[in-house]
Amino acid sequence: MFNITDEAQTYIANLFAQQDEEGLGLKVDIEKAGTPVAAVTFNFCYEKDLGKTYSKFAYKGFNAFIDKSNFDYLKESKVTLKTQDSGKKLTISAPNAKGEEPKADAPLEEKIQYTIIAQVNPQLASHGGFVELIEVTKDKSVVLNFGGGCQGCSSVKITLKNGVEAQLKSIYPEIKNVVDVTDHSQTKNAYM
Image 1 (tube, rainbow, N blue to C red):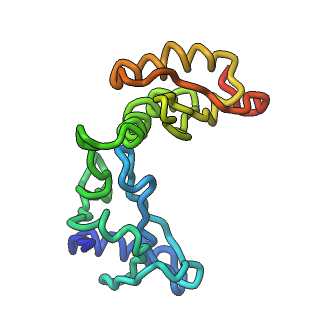
Image 2: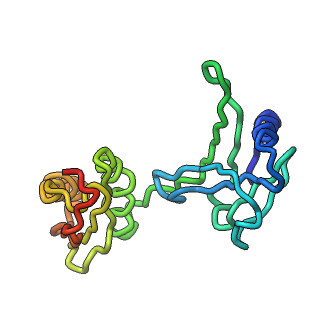
Image 3: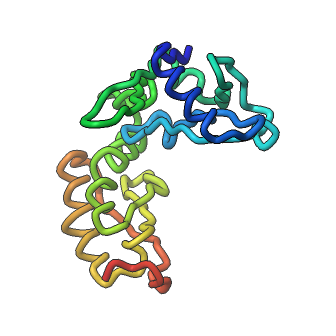
């Protein structure tokens, strides 16, 4: 399921040896699994601190721990060691981590959710913001909640109408309107 080349195993085992801590393991997780922005992460961990949903996998010189909910996303994954400039870097190929773009006949809510994750949020991230889909109503209104730098931002109305709404309506013309239900009185992290 989770293939680590011999060269990469040796490299990782050396990292563990440098830590000189008994019982240290490698926790493998996927942030935002099944979405276009999924990312595989590696962190040091102790088995005793992990939940019961994690399974242990033995490698040369270390153990890796993977949450069972990530098994399908990590199928056919491969960790390799690449030489880059003057150093070495672990790289992972995880072809199933990101999931698939919704089919043309998928529910509108599923397609909008995918578009928000794949296209809208990467644009908002430049200002430290993001948007979450709350629901698509029966009358095709899209209800959103802004967060991060967009929550409480003085430009959020412009971002909503000229950015998010315009983008979503250009892709999904059946959308009637886009509604923001965010509590913008919280301005602590606002971009503007």
